[in-house]
Image (cartoon, rainbow, N blue to C red; front, side, top):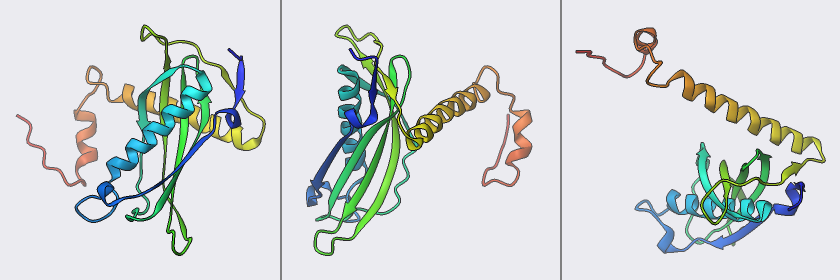
Length: 181
């Protein structure tokens, strides 16, 4: 196993035609189908980097920026943004393309945390990320801070430490009615 690999060595992209069988009741491509494709490409990218079977540990925020139409091509691009000891963050970008006009749109981006596993299902070490430009530094740093922010958020709202009285006043202007018993 290499000690470090560049993001370029593990980059993966796929393009697929969106068919009527991929549509939802509104006639647009179902978001769940796009998420499935995103998970598949994140797996491929992480497995290529680690040279191991990988599983999805978490998905960080998926915003659907624009709908995908049946008959359009979607291209998914994935690259490693961050590496820990056994996990990696895979950035996934989705773009649609109208095949008659050639117009392209950014549909969504997301970040998948993937963990490398051995044949017994145990976490195993992965190669680190070799960063060779400012964009790589930005992506690695952003992923590091996103990971720390998620940990802080989870800790702050852990049920064993949460004090509801401290937060009730914050909810006064929200669309909620609190009736404690």
